[in-house]
Length: 587
Image (cartoon, rainbow, N blue to C red; front, side, top):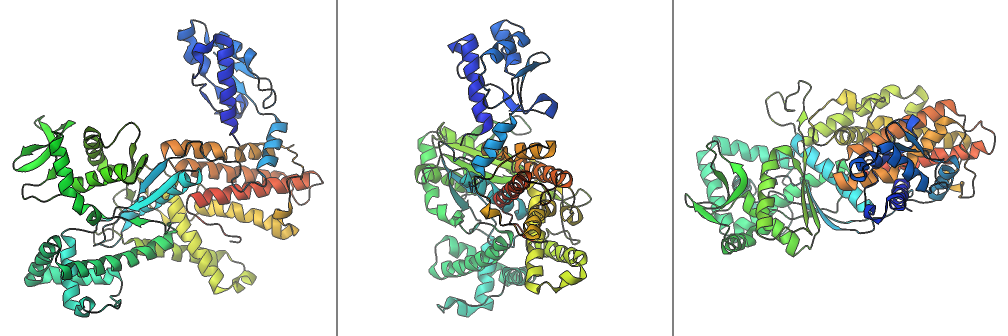
């Protein structure tokens, strides 16, 4: 099913050609949802843009377009307003027919993209030698959301976690493993090493207190880089411990299990090839013993060109070399058409630099799109980086546990006395869903490029653009079902749709804009668009619910409003699922 806006754009373009000739074929109709209901449902500004080209007043152009515009089966007669805006208002009969068409569709009328792409979303990519902290929240949540949305609209999405699984920090952990768990290197059975947090803290304590241990850690790095068999085994054990620890957090966050860990170590064998190929292409310049690519548009304080180092003077490699190897591998081996990096805005220069080198090397072409999707910081109430009192980054596990505990306390406070007979299992599940959803939604509802202030009170509020507000709107519809003994699945496609009240008409129109929102996110990768859509949908449903009787209405309004309520709930459920948020049947 084509979206309404796509269909209308096609008709406006046809009208342009009919009015002014084939030269205007392919012109952007500049059609968008109207900013105010008094302007109708959609508004085209194309006449204003064509005034200079056609040498006519915009209003005259708009009137000629309208004369050729054949949309009577969709819209009321088009009108021209102001200096030349073309306003389009959907017919109620068309809206009713569209609702009937999507009623039994699990995709709610969202058609798969016509030209699907093979896409990599690179997330959450933690450093395996360290615990996940609050700084890992946004890449995990935003990356998973982008992957879900792109996959839903029909793209072939490969989720890859470019984990930091190589380098100096591993020396400390390997040395500690050898010292505290020597049996781990001689047995084939998986030992219980505890969780990563305690393992890491104990290793760090030894590293800080004992000079001999620090030397052992340094030697472990040398042995690891040299490919020593026993050191590699110890490294793998540490990586496995980290992966188990991260998976617990991913599961709590509802992060897809379909993530391929392809860390820095994966690209190690290719690093010499990268340097050789860049040298062969004439891109390398030696600078103070290091092999560099000098970049366009990057200079130091003295105005001299800044280099991107791809091989250090001691022969070692760095993050840039590994990232370049990943670019080449993803293009040549993975055969991707689009790569998306949801990574903090502080890495903007890094991505600009490696993308430039990738283009100059011929790996990135017009057929392949590499995108850095930057995001801002998570801040504390005072507007500073969110940290513990000791100045350290807050552990992600602790942050999530606190959200669940607060959600549980709120749920228990609000439950009526007779409802406190709910099972412990129900309360624990509801608290986890509400707490985790609140954290995720608070993040995703912000424009990802902005910083935001982390506030448990705000994100757990039942009012406003929050997860609890969305969840409660869904629960409200399920309450209608329970109270009326209604099985929504039995409301077939032959049920009448009758839209009379302005609130139910506004709600129906909003339901039908779901596909338009997803199309926009496919292009700009801004999940907050979906959050805002769901918030407005929930608001419109509550306005409809407060004004229009549902179970008490006479037929055919009763069944029609049940269908509309259910379509609203299904849209909320599907929309939240694309944000990685499950629904609750009761709250």
